Image 1: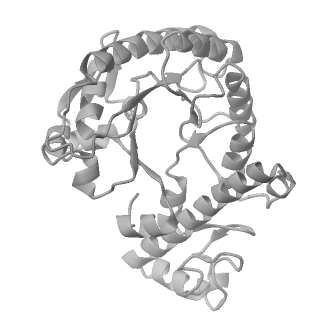
Image 2 (image 1 turned 90 degrees about the horizontal axis):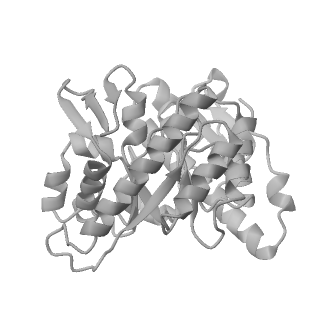
Length: 339
């Protein structure tokens, strides 16, 4: 959540924020956050928090890390210092950060990966999932944050891996169910595979995951994608896309994607999205937003981010409303988001 203060997120109706375990571990450090009362108090956010395990971040450090049965040794991208993430260490850090939902440590399978590699990665993830849960169960009744007056507790979710092989995904999900997590995530997607394959893997995996527990797809996606995933049974999704795209001048609108830095918006007095009621669209023109971006003003990232967040949150509100009404036709016939 770069460029937007917490009070604006509350105004937009955001209910949960994801905290990045890898980055918080390196800076400012989980022990400092713990001593400050946990991440909720440190960042002044009383609504829900979720932390990832750090597995995806160390996966992305392909030239700076080494994977063994014990865990992942890596060098910091900040100063080159050496570190080790094990399942136990990841859970220890997340418990210190104090998020409401925390994730088991997993190995994210690269794409493409042959079947042997995908199975080996899946087996590692399953072994790490058990170690994560064992450590969590042994320490969950400890209060890691001083003055925990809110009485907050944490829930640990397991992560399904298995590459782009539906049968491996199903096997991983079935074996994770034996560990009886309170919710399950589908990880290792949006790593370069075709969008059609992403949808296939999600659909196949959902067949195994219980409908009475949260089902979370990690690292997705564009508005049309998250809409479709929600309608086939996904409960939770996360993605840096709305904020990262905003900082690069890409806006999501009811008419499709808008590259606000294009010269054709230089004298356009219309709001970014004629159908949007967010504070940005209610006040500012496309021409002004383009000027801010081209001029390199920090405000460009702020306003673009507020609009994109409003659009994403409105999208999910529309999905929830359609599900309650039992009429998904309007959602499925929405705009096609083409580059």
